[in-house]
Image (cartoon, rainbow, N blue to C red):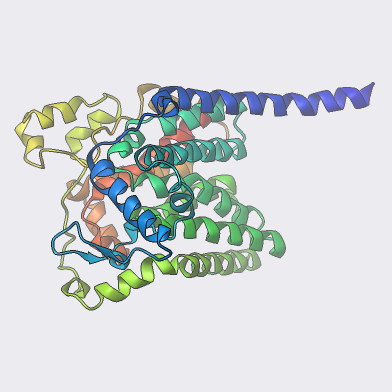
Length: 395
């Protein structure tokens, strides 16, 4: 009788997990149900860039070669100079067999679902209930920031891998005392890093390292117990980075080599070249859907409008409920929320650009970001962190 009781107790959490997972995916799919009726969601950069780029790659592959020349911009340029064609990204290649416009929508939706699954998996490892983890997944997938990526597209791809990078980082930290399991975590982290880099969105892929660090520290708050563990973690991270760079080299190495022969190889000026920032007035949009953006597009208020007629993200909305739940996360007895909340705050401080002194100091220290002209992208770190915190607060 006790054996049957034990089996029942083990089966119940599994049933709850499956039910919560199914409910989460159904909720996300319901929002995008036109996609399952054969319709496509195309606007802005997705229609003007993503679809033509995918066509160029597919056309070349159908003739047994790689895409080499893009004739659509200026006098044309070599495809190898722009990693955003994602000529080696497995998910891009796997969906090229679908009808082009609809297949592009499927391509983006798969990343929305993959990011939601990642947040669910990360939240479960942070000891939340299945239902709470599902709340986090929905908060990630249906936030205004991710919804805006149906306009931009390319930033969504590596962002969907953020939670998976955190899970892999957590494996490295948690198993620092076990060389074999730590190595497996490093392998997973390297593979996830390679997938992020192969999307071609280099800066968002680099941001993933910061989210991975925050998530990893949350999963293993006592990750540095002794010198041997610290040494093993350092070696694992170096190995993961080397693996990610090696596997993604076909995407970035030709671009770096070509750029090195042009004027763009010159070092940037004393300060970062900034175009798109999350203006401090737009922080209202985190809790108020499109409040400032609609005024900005209409030309008011002038203090916002002068920063550009169209923002990078048409919506920075994170959700009132998600923000409330994220705030509730700080009441948990566990302090696991602290590293993730730190990433959320850092994302905001970086996204507002020179409105906070943090951004200029950051790009001075982390030099690759001195080439990025859109600090607003950093809001992806805040958005992903709030989703995970919402799951923790939902408990």
